[in-house]
Each structure stands twice: as structure tokens, then as C-alpha cells.
Image 1 (tube, helix red, strand yellow):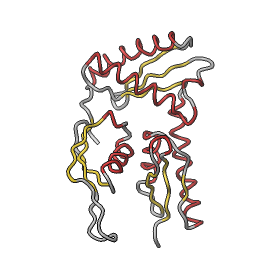
Image 2: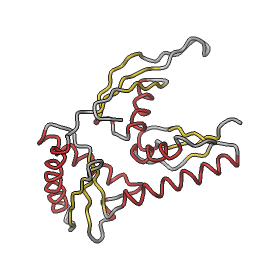
Image 3: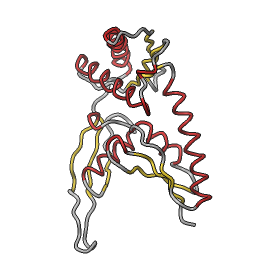
Image 4: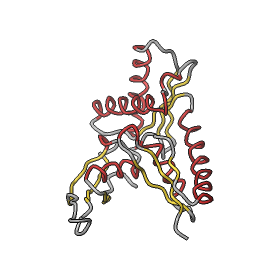
Length: 217
């Protein structure tokens, strides 16, 4: 979706719809605004219930010039964070006009990635917050460590297609391991046009995962 575009998302509850929005946008809750259109309500004996409906708008982001400024600030911020953690690494900023990446290169930086990539996701959020506090715009840039996210994206796309074949062959849903919102979005996009399966997210917070379902014949 383009910056500032408003989309409507439904869910059993407002909380469910919000989690669905995180998956669809690949953003964390702090990165978009929510307008509640309708609160969900339970029916009587399963009859007459209504799903919740929310309107979601990503926070205003920096344009190309802002990204350059944000990138320079980001390099400075990440360098300081590395120093505070006693880690050594080179920070490079790349912006090809469609994506902006702060990549940290160095030895023994696995601690910055963490289990299931949770640490790098937290680091990225902190860096975005610190940049936003300086330029009053939310920077949609990615923080990567030794190209981990690039490799992870390829691995997730391959995994999604492999598990899709398994779900189709076994005729039952298969759940992937819990993963951050941006990684769940990679899986959803990889299967968006798949002819035989579809994907949904299930679970809450750090245990939220993608479930791949075979389509009905």
C-alpha cells in the first residue's frame, strides 16, 4: 500500500483486527493509526454476532529526501548503540528509491539478531523511534545485520511454498513457527496468489504464527 493510504480491516474483535492489520501492513502497532468503525459483538447462540471493523492508516513517513536524512541519523544512532553494547561493526545505509536499509556488518553480531529474529526486530523499532523523534516523521527503513533479513526473506518464501505443498498433499492446515509481523507478511505475500492454499495468522503477541490451509476442492 502507498504511504497514507487508509484500509479497512475486520476481525472477531478490535484486537483481532489490529493483529490482522499488523500482518497485512508488516508494521508494528506503534506504526499506524486506528479508527474503530465498529466494535465486534457476540451473538446469542452464535446468531446475530458482528465482526469488528477498523480503519488503519500508516503514520506519515519521510519522502526520499527525508529518508536520506533519516539514514544519516540512523547510521549515527546505530553506531552509538553498538558502542554502548560493546560491539564492533560497520553501519552502511542504502536507499534504491523503493527501500531503505541500515545494514550492520561485522563479526560475532548474532546477538543482534536473536532467537527467531526478535532482537533485530526490537532494534529496528528502537532505531525508527529515535529517528522519528529527530525528524518528526516515521522512517520506513529496515535495520539488517550481515544481510540476515535478505536471506531470511528468501528462506521464508521457500518455506512457505514447501509447506503449502505439504498442506495440500495432507489436506490439513499446517502451522509455521511463531515469527514477527514483518516475517508473517512475507509468508502471506508469498502465498497470496497460490491456487491451492491460503494463509492466516493465529496466536497472540510473541506466539503469533502463520497457519497454511488447503483450499476446498
